[in-house]
Length: 264
Image (cartoon, rainbow, N blue to C red; front, side, top):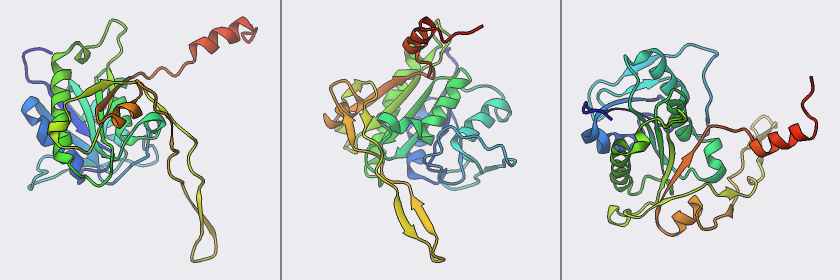
């Protein structure tokens, strides 16, 4: 970063009224100029969805502890996308998302709106960090915010705050145990573990006699071996997972070409 004050864009998926985003914003204000653009309502599980079927509206909060926050009647991705493509006069230096109520580990990152907001920043060449607490309920969210401050401060002074020679911005997925700040000094750089398949849907009858279906709970942990995000959390550490957006299966790509899948 240059000597100027860094500009930090903050979003989330729990909505602008969630305790997690307020704690995160207050914790990083000493680190730079902060802009908050978050969804009007909870969009957990929205992943990277964009709203294309209707226009979006942006409103500014006036007064109270969220004074100056902006909120959008859309998804986390909408928030960052709109910010990057016209609402802000210039790109921010960093996009941070959270603090989410509940963990985002393993395959969770594919569904997470929290992670999606950070991803959207990376798609525009801006480094992104997604923050989540392990347990729901906002217990010790202020402690988690202090830990998030430390990670953001480390990011701003490190080489990860700059695009590397491959031109790809850094994307970090951070999970924080619900513990006192004094216990959150241990960080582990991890890979994503994985889960078993999700639990079956819960089937009920509606008042009109129709079948209705609730998505089942996430699957239990399948791989929590050493080096994974699950293992770090089991050890009481903060998990920091660097991720990338390239979904190409390069080994399979080469094998398919070698086996005659290319035609013409």
